[in-house]
Length: 163
Image 1 (cartoon, one colour):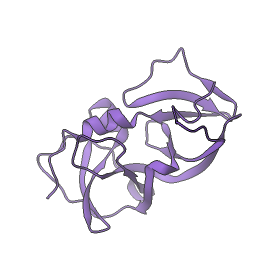
Image 2 (cartoon, helix red, strand yellow):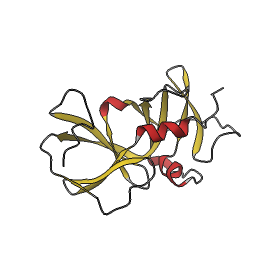
Image 3 (cartoon, helix red, strand yellow):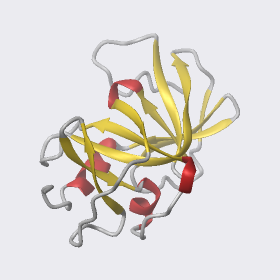
């Protein structure tokens, strides 16, 4: 199975990614999508936010939305990971909303994974693909989900502009 790397115009031999634990699954996030990994920080609450959004965080002189990916998938309230919380700041890859960056909460520290063109990937064809996931597969014995950034960012459209 080849996903190298998902419809790129110029083929690449490898891509570095992070495996992040969202509490519900392990996401495989390509490094070009990642702006920074930060420790948990103060969240600015917003009464009008969707239930899957923690609130807003300050990052590099910007105020960006902090979302719980697993809660967004199930349209449920956010979970608290306690002291093991990390925040993954992502670059917006899709146009059509006002958020250039957004953050996903994760449990523990993300792990680096290098996916190479000849990596043994086995797709989970018989498994129903969850919301906001474009591909579900096993890599080196680890089950991973590749996020559907376009679908995630469609959800960002329902977040009112920050303060």
